[in-house]
Each structure stands twice: as structure tokens, then as C-alpha cells.
Image (cartoon, rainbow over all chains, first blue to last red; front, side, top):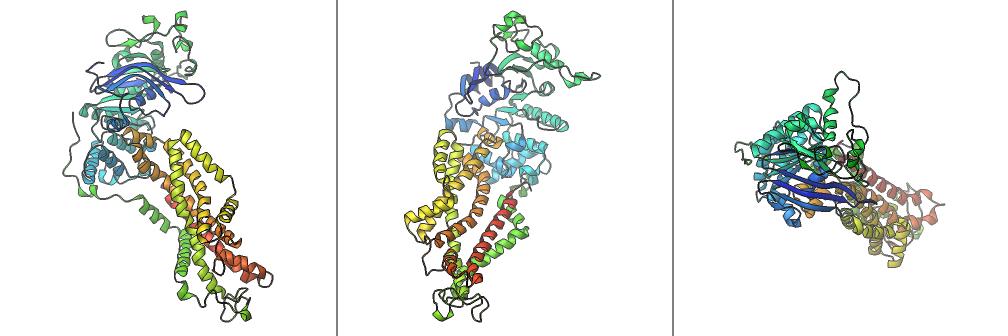
Length: 321
Length: 296
């Protein structure tokens, strides 16, 4: 494993054994994120982006099969015992959820929840923990923090809750922040504030961030690199500017073409025809082949490998092989 | 890499204790006139039960052949006398003691045992859940009255046995509610969020599961108190609960039923007491449910 990477995922596969057929949600994903780097995992619903990220914290239900190797800060995540995992979650890696209203416990005040998190990992007194919660609330720019700390989640707006969630995630000075569509549930004006806040805190703390999103505009705003996922595999990966300027994979091209911003003057948005494949019954070749405009016979039989294309970029398409 | 530094100028009120969940519940409950009325009536009944020896005009078990079945309003016996010539006021006052005990005692015991069973089953899920809940279902299959009668019959009559059988009747009901709320809570994001921030299962159960499921189970349990009173009265009526000459409302209903054609109003009095008490418990638990809904 590379020693300079903060997050190193090698050939990760995740199979859910719920229901009749096992579902392979992630299928041989390899990723690496350097210290202080922001990687956006881009993909539509069910492409396996959240599953990949949750694997890093081993948050999957019992009976889920995880194959491959994952290391964060040089520690092998797959081999951690239950106790080690508890000390690892929150202190080394923490996570921001999509719906702050659901991800915060409704019967405790925000202050209590942050204090609990701090005291779980560090031996500090309640008053010190509460002073730190106060400092964190100032850091994420919540107005009148001392009063807000005593509020229950239902008493606050979505944007303020997501700020609290970020404060809670940063409570124990983690090295890695996992963000699972943290702006999707918020309205547009609040979205950009949260993105800027994450970007700013990431720079200040030198965090490595995996940012899961389905919005290519958000990915471009926040990330250094983008990895595009489709049906449990990474189809293209590279620097933000390169992907935006020169997308290689037909799926990425399709995503870029389907943006609302490009629709001005036209009645309809350009869409990618068809729907993603059923993960329980994947096509034998390239998963995107049934929807691809540039499909050839070889696409339907062989799964294309992720190969280097240009500098610092990879693509999994037969056209570039 | 930066760390969070303590802002020493942080105002001290940030460290002051935040108002608890329960103080909010209490505040909202106090604003509910119906719940407060019900609670006052219940407190008066408890007070009457405690002070029974001091406020009852006569000895509740001392009868007289010449004063049998006096109607309501008889001088000296405001609510009349029963079939053995005992003063109804004194009997009803003393009856409050046993009736309240039989209504109230089984519920908290069943609450503790049933919640524990249900929460373990709900949190563990899978095969553990199936084993526990199917066992519970066996008890749940019988109508509660039938189960209480059968258990009391098997254990023999008497106060303790009646309490035991009522407790056993309520455990499966509470366990079922506890299991279903726990199963719901377990799947919620904040439980995942707590796991993601490093909370061990013990903390998750203690803080996040208990904090969110105890409320609904508690409310359900308070509504069982009235059921318990009625079942207890039923057991006494059948001669499986309290034994004569002790005063208990259900038992009084049983012994007075012979007088129902001669003196129906006196015969109905214990039933009226059971009705008032159980409806007060129900109204109070409704108020509690509303007060515990944080979003209201």
C-alpha cells in the first residue's frame, strides 16, 4: 500500500445478502486520497458511492460481505476489532450525513450530543467538553452559539443543523471527513454556504475529504479530484478541471451534458437514455453499454479495466484501451 | 494540522446546564387542563386511600343485620349500606387501597421487564428477535382476561398471586410495543451517526435507543393501568383476587350483585369508582402522550 495516501482502498467489493439474491453494490473499487485532498465521488442513486464511503467506517448491516483492502492513515480498517473500531470512528474518521434532521438525536440538545462525542474519545470534564462545543459552534459560524447549544434539533433550521453536524464531526479533530451528500437536503442558497464552510474547514484542518454527491456542479465546487461511479464501479477518475474540460467516458460526457445550466433556451433537458442496470443481474460486459451511444460488440462481453489516460487520470472505456 | 483551541473568553453561560427533556414535558403537561384534572382526581383518590383509617366514618368490615341494603341518602349512611349492613362510604374508601395497588403495581414491574425484553429483541434483530418475539406471541395469543384468569386460577387466589398474574399478562404487550419502537429507532440515521462517531453498542442502547423508546413505551404503559384495574376487579369478582371481607371495588361489585334488583344504585357504586379511576388514568396518559411529542 502507498504510504503517502491518507485513504487507500484496493479492489473493494461490497455484497449485501438481504432478500433473495445477493446484491453486489460495489464491484472492485480502488481509490486513494492524499492528506489534505478532497475527492468527490460522483454518481447517481444506487451507483454504490455511499456504500463505498460507509465501508470505510464499516457501517454496513450484519451479513454484508466486504472484500478487498482499505487503509486509513496507514491502519488497516478491515482488521480492526470492535473496540479499536470504536476508538477509530469519530476520532480518526468522521462522517457528515445527508439529512441533518434525521442524523441528530431528537431527544437531546445539540450541546449534549457534541459533549457526548468529545467525552467518548477524550478524558475531559463535562465543562471542558462544553467549552469546546462552544468553540466548535463559533467555528462553524452558528450565531449566538451559547443559546443554540441548548436547542433541540427540531428547533433549528436545516442549514444550522448541518453546521451542527459538521461541528460534531470535527469535535475530535479527525484526519478524514466523509461527507454523504451533505447539501442535498438543503435549499440552494444554504447549499453554497455549507460547501464553502466545508472547503474552508478542510483547508484549515488539513482534512482529507471524500465527498459523495450526485451533483457535478457541487463536485466541481468542492473537490480537487473527481471519481465517477456507475453501477458499483469507477468509470473515470481525474482532476476536476480535466474532467470538466475534457470528459472521456461516455457516461461522464452524458452527465456533463445533462446539467440544468446548459438547458437555457431549450424546452427539454438532455438526458442519458435508459436506466442503470439491476445490481442483482448485471450485464456481462461494460455496465454502461446498454445506454451508451458509442457502444461496440466488445463492450457487451468484456468489462473494461480502469486504465491511465492523460496525466493523473484514469478511465474505464474500451475506446481508450 | 490545526486543532480546536479553547476560547478562554467563552461566556460562562455556555457551560450552564441545558434544560432537560422532562422539564419541557412537565411544562407542557401543566398547561393541559384535562390531564391536570385527571391527575388531581387521581391524587385525591391516592390521598383518600392513604388516609382511609382517619376519614372513613365506620369500620368497613363491621356489619349489622338490621341496617342491610339501606338506599343512598340514608341519615348517617350517605351512600347506603351493602348486603351485610356495612357502610358503603367506608368500604369504598378502604377499597381504594387495594384497587389502586392492584391497578398500579403490576404495570411498573411489567414495564421494566417488558421493555428490557422488547428492546433487546428489537436491537438484536434477526434470529434473537424471532426467538424472543415468538415466545412472547405465545402469551399474546390468549385474550388478556382469559390469561389473567387462567394464571390466577393456577396460582390460587390472593393478592400476591393476582399481582403476579396481572404482571405476566402485561409483559408481552409492553414487550411488543418496545420491540416495534426499538426496531424503528434502530434503523434511523442518528443511530448510524452515533456508530459513525464511535459509540459502542452499550452507549447506543443506553443513550440513543432508551432516550427515544422509553417515552412511547411509558405512555403505552400508563394506559395499561386502567386495564389492570379492570382486570383486577374482574379477578376479585371471580373470587381469584382479594378475599372477603377485605374491601376491593371488584369484589364489592361481586358481592353486591345479589342486591342489584333491590338497590341498583348502591350496587353500581363500586363500578362507578372503577370507571372514574380508569378514565382518569386514560386521560392522563393521553395528556402525557401529547406532552412528550417534542414537535408540538
